[in-house]
Amino acid sequence: AMVMASSSALVTAYAKLQGKDFVKYLTKPEVTLGRNGREQESAPDIELGESKAISRAHAKIGYNREAARFEIVCLSKNGLFLDGRYLSCYYLPAPLDSGSLIQIGSVLFYFLLPTRVVNGSLKGVEITLPKGKPEKAKWTNEELEAIC
Image: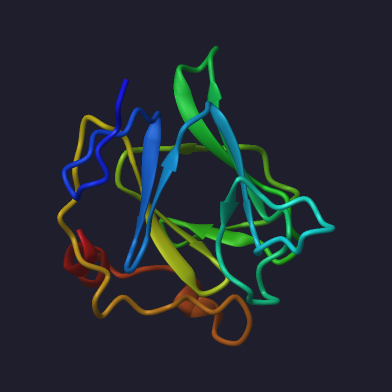
């Protein structure tokens, strides 16, 4: 099978991660996300940049067959945000819905299943900072409506 490298290319994927300036496809049922790997280190399946706020193995997205859903597990002490809610490495896997907003370090992206496309832009979305103002750990309804 030939794959055309055009903007309308069909990609066989379980889901996609849609950021402001990137799209990553989940081409297998379980992927690791993290900081860009050096050659001697094992790189994550999906690289999220060079920031030290992002661990080399920061999170794992996988399909849970029993629950018939995708889940995200935080592997890093730095934590992550899922729909504005803070998750640390001590939390159980959290279910992902199509349209879930994930933030790792200062990288924001949507988890999207093939059945639903979000045309929302990430313009004006404020980065949630884990330290400092705890009240900023929650998104307001207006913010969420602005995103979605």
